[in-house]
Length: 159
Image (cartoon, rainbow, N blue to C red; front, side, top):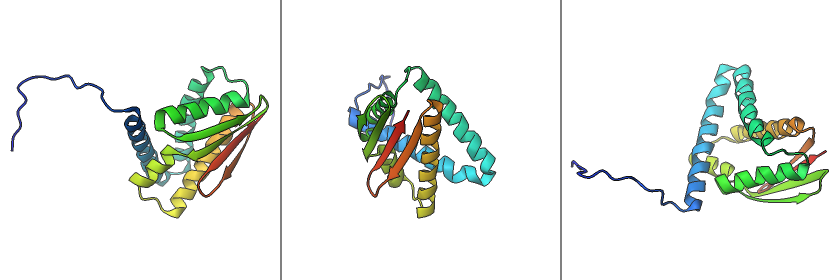
C-alpha cells in the first residue's frame, strides 16, 4: 500500500510532559546501556575517556548554576532528573550536608525495560554511577556517600 501526502503539514508538539519524560529516559537509558555494553571491549582507557568527557559536560552545566553548598547540589541534580526524565526524588539537608533519595529512578527503570542487562552488567552500571557521584562531589569540594537499597538509593554530599 502506498500513502501519498498531498499537503505539507507542520507536526506540532502535542505529547504530555509525562510522555516526553518517559521517552527521554528511554532514549538516554538505552543509549547509555548500549555504550557501556560495547565500550569495555575497547579497553578500560576508552571507558575512562568516555566518563571524563561526560563529566566535563555535566560539570560545565552545573557550574553555570553557581553551586556552593551540598543542598544546592542535590536540589539541582534532583530538579534535572525529575523534570527531564520523570524520576521521583526527595531531598533534605543543610548548607553542610544534604541528601537525595531516589524513590524511583526513571533512567534505571527505562534501562531495565529497554535493555536486557545481566546481574553483572547492572552491578557495573551501579559502580559507574558511584564513580560519577564521587567525581561530582570532588568537583565541588564535597565528599559523597551512596547507599544502594533494593528499591531506592540515597546519595549524601558533605562539605
